[in-house]
Image (cartoon, rainbow, N blue to C red; front, side, top):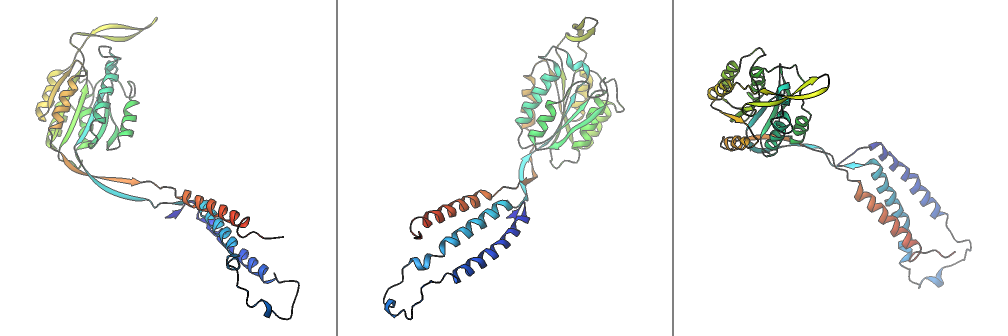
Length: 327
């Protein structure tokens, strides 16, 4: 046990003059009437109250001591603990280019993808999961972690416009590979969601796939978009309108990435396709991960406060009943 405010413990020094004053006071408490002999009282037995007369002061002293400890705020000691759990390393690489605002998914492709990804993250409590976003460039939004709350909060804030527009699939995959390649698990998986074709970036999707294969990383690619045309928001002098534009997904490249890395390609025309991904990932080999967890401080002042209250109540009760003084 330690104290949040140990300086208050110096108040214990004030108890020393209180004890000195009490002893001095009782030494001076002699009868004003002096008699020559106490022989006549020798056969009278001593009352138990004679031995309890100092109990009131002791109870008050203990109550004050407990209050001082409450002011010092006792706390449990912090510690780090290592816990083993089973899981795999996963990085979700999410396309946030402006085309993800198309309304063939409700409310749009990006929000639908975020919703499915959130459900996936919540359903994998023992996995190390990270999040990469990409458009015309790529960025690691969250390194691999087992902290589901932080990851989900970051995913919730993802929106189009956070990065330079266009679609750099190769860069998005390469960034995910760089984040996952040194992970502790034997099974490493990247889930790449996009709705377009690679038209930006410094690394081609095929090159990124070869790098992933070198590190034994399996890549699941998902083409997000319905077949044919999809309503897309267009700015006009009269506001935002929606025009049907052709859905162009480079399925050949996404299929090639999956083939190179021993993964699988899915065409997501609805959220149900993600169930196939869950089933596929569940078949992966799991490995033990050592997770370092921090135990926070816990306040322990409540028992001391209750003890002070009970001691004061006991002192008041005895003072006005059993050990009551007669004026």
